[in-house]
Length: 328
Ligand code: NCD
Image (cartoon, rainbow, N blue to C red; front, top):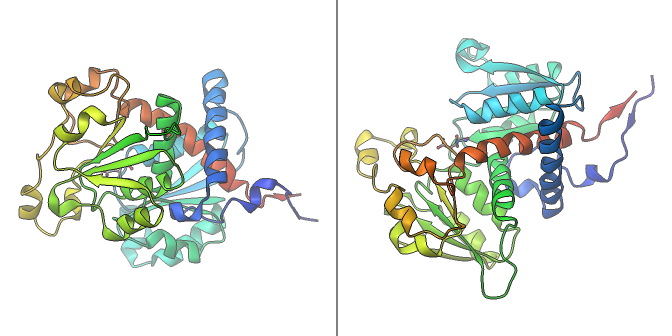
């Protein structure tokens, strides 16, 4: 039987794995944004299609997840494929199997692996032992690239553009919360480096500010950014308010967590001072950083954000699973 590589212009811009935003360029991001739109119309008109029929996704979650794991599963099923899942408690990890061996096992059964793991760098490590595309669904305090992609897709759908190119009026994106441990923030900031007409505002408890290596990347790319002390200072100028929860599980002690919890909350009072076209985003889950009453405000985009996420993950699976596709 002769096997041959699919010749596609895509293949040169799609990396073998999606571990970090650093793996992808603007061309691929634009392609994913367009594909996510196609996926949205497929789902809204027919419910799904058979683009990934007979293909199998391995879903390895070693940390809790609702949205990421379910949206990847839903995305795969909407594309006609199936999902096999491994969860740590029921896997051979409890018998002492290494991540490396688990990855090599999964490669025998599936066409791509989605992995979430508490250790920073774990997805990168997994990719070294994988003959199939590895997609990072969160590696500890490292990165969460598919969330960042769905986040910018949300901005595009809600505001029509990512960054304002008109002179003198950048799009102001305010990131509020645990910027130190929040991997969604780390990936989003790195992704926004690919755009112009953006100004970033950072607001966090002083001990939870953005890591200095990411700040350096912003400086090197000449992206305007500023740190403010509280949301009151920033709300009236903000176009996108990206709120995150304090990542309790990443603290060394409960005392350290308790010293910062409850230090900010988006409520009707704050929303009163915001622009009419501002959107509020959140990767979710939330604790108490956005009040329930805010859910009723049409500018609250965090529930719509989840739906955009499924379309973006359909686009990601379609492109990465068909990379270097073999035809028979
Ligand atoms: C986030 C995560 O797991 O990093 N959620 C998500 O994937 N949608 C955010 C969080 O846990 O706070």
